[in-house]
Length: 82
Length: 411
Image 1 (cartoon, helix red, strand yellow):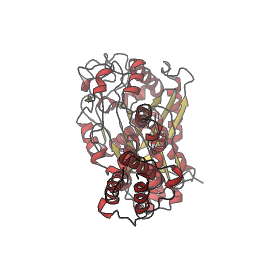
Image 2 (spheres, chains in turn green, red):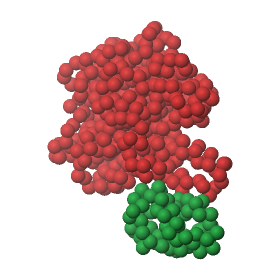
Image 3 (tube, rainbow over the protein chains, first blue to last red):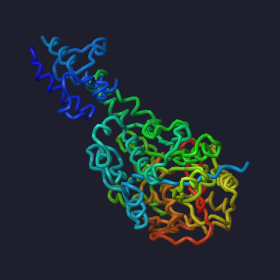
Image 4 (cartoon, rainbow over the protein chains, first blue to last red):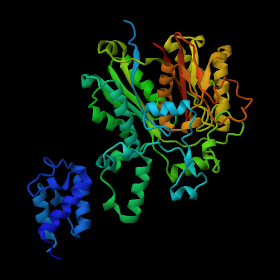
């Protein structure tokens, strides 16, 4: 099922806010998970598992290291859902 | 070179009778019970339907994101440590001279059990990546060490219900041995859950006075029938005396000595002769350089079990002799319940307040004093302690036969 990038971004904002306590308003496509949003490696696992549940996609462990920014994650999820 | 002296310069606590030290201490002097019926559904499925939950939920004292990454025992440790650190004046210190020793009897047991439920119901993929840092028994100490950036050493002694007192003794040693100038020390426990409670109930260790929860914890009463499980924690900032003087710190009292022994008798039952307790007390007095004549107060282990209270009282009478007549004995578990690894820590906080206010807290719920109890128990109302130089003791014992006695002295 195709997903709209804007919907994926909105969903990721909610997940990151829940997991890391970062206000959704400050989460944008160019933000770096580690450096800008203080999502550490353990919290990133939580984000990935929550995103898989929410968007019905698989995000393999080897792909996670390439998800540097929020935009990377949106693109990966949109492509995986096609 | 003379031995380095150690003083108490900060206190913190979250207990079943208060969310901080001041509130807990007032409630203690007023004889308030923190024991209540549990409202969770599971409580009705086990033999014991009550416990002593903390008076103030961590969710009222911490940020939501912090809460979800920390086991409840770790939450208690951070809450109490933050209060204690602030009370100590948030001292500026070389972090390589700052240590943390915070104990827990059974660690992150609710995290372990909750995540096991998730594993069985939803599979391994949904087990939280925070599981291990949350369930490890050194998690409370590690989180406090991380927050304060302590680099002299972070430790977690584990000796069941003696853990909290042992942690404070370990901290005393760290400063005496010149490993640190300040050590944040104490103990926590968060084990109110159907599984550990069922285990304690199966040992017949818990009171089953379900119709009168607030009257269930009754150390020294003839009809006591077991302990009441409590949760929370206490933290003391210990500091080398000259270091405290140099920075103009508020000094509560001195922690002057400790005595540690083991029974070698039984995995859970107390040695009825109390020989191990007597030796621990003797060692503690010798370590502190005082005699039985100097002791005016003892915050007893007294958990409200039929065997334990009398064994302890007999040992104290034997060790103190006629000097037991001027020792005001308080059993504060009558109000807080038994915090297991947190017990020796909150009771040490209470002793420091006792020396400060010169008031021994009451023991509540004694309707008929057990005639086998041969120590002078402070009942119902606080009792004033004498002026001048005085000393007070905390004793803590744990399953496994661990005995710890700590000595606090006015300054």
